Length: 216
Image (spheres, rainbow, N blue to C red):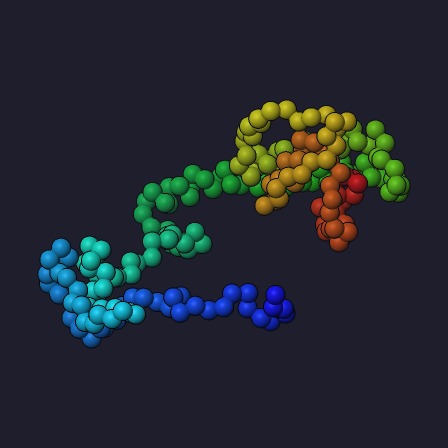
């Protein structure tokens, strides 16, 4: 039995692996006005090894008129089709939605301030990073959790449907979830108040670092 190394091919090339049909397309010739059913590509050469075809439309035998590339139809989600205010309808929408936007901003700022103050009170004087937070400090964090739900409300999440019921912490103490936006951490903070896995650099972020420390 012959010995093989890492550089030698496993299979030797065979002459039968060569292409049997070669299509030659003449780009300079004009397309024919005949229908695909009546148009037959002329046969130029007959050989035992290969067959050469020359035609303005090599796909006519498949019933295709021509081989054209269609225009792209993909919609670009990052392109704004209406960069300017056009029409009375757009102006009326802005006038009606402007007070709602201001109310949402006020609600967001108030909830952020109240939640931050409650979190600072819960962390006041607590320096132990090895043991869980005492119960009375966790009860103060309920104020921050309610504020987190109102922040989601200000973002437009008025109602969040829940399917099923989460298992108790004694049975399933670890939650693995998708994190594709800033919404998931806020929701799980309100819903479960877990101890999240985050980078140590997040501790220096304003507002967020304080809440992360309270979540241990």
